[in-house]
Length: 237
Picture 1 (cartoon, rainbow, N blue to C red):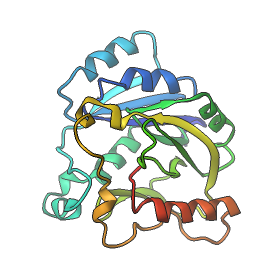
Picture 2: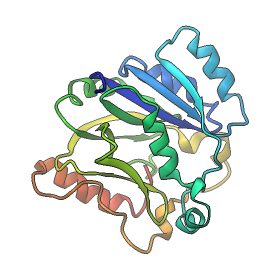
Picture 3: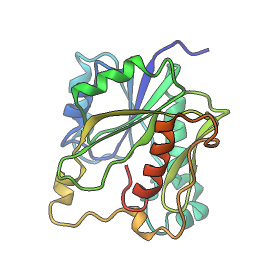
Picture 4: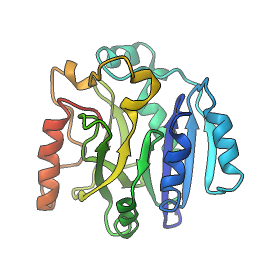
């Protein structure tokens, strides 16, 4: 039995630009932060080691498999080389956490004060979905079920056509209506001179729903599902 609390798992590959701001902004909310480096070649590790000197809730691990990029052809790549699966990577990250609930956090997300409100939510709900602001007002975020009760028998990531999706058997998803973070993706150096292209632009079918069904969902959760079905066609959170 895991102790009651909230773990964050953060998958990182070359996130030196915002990783310190990301982790210090959300540090107060989590009981632990497990950062998993996936073949980073920049100074992410160096910055994390410096940060850990006075942030003891942060742990750093390594995952060495070369993961397939999200987008067109993703599932074909994974079927040919299963070790490249993002779902396998994410599920491995889940296993490294320690507490009853986990949160998928990204190294280019910076928490804003409203995110503190999730501390009052995760104990009463098996799944909490929240959203954020893209700093350039682009469609890079959506209401995603990012916090969920750890239960590998009923909650796992699975591979879909274009990327990984969270599959769970919890019928109720709580939609936290407050925007919780700033998404810095499109102001990274790598994106300065290229257009944003969502992986969903190449989708030929809708992404599968995360939960076990609409029955028992709160009205706001039904709204969230409808929003996700629309937003997934133009953005990947």
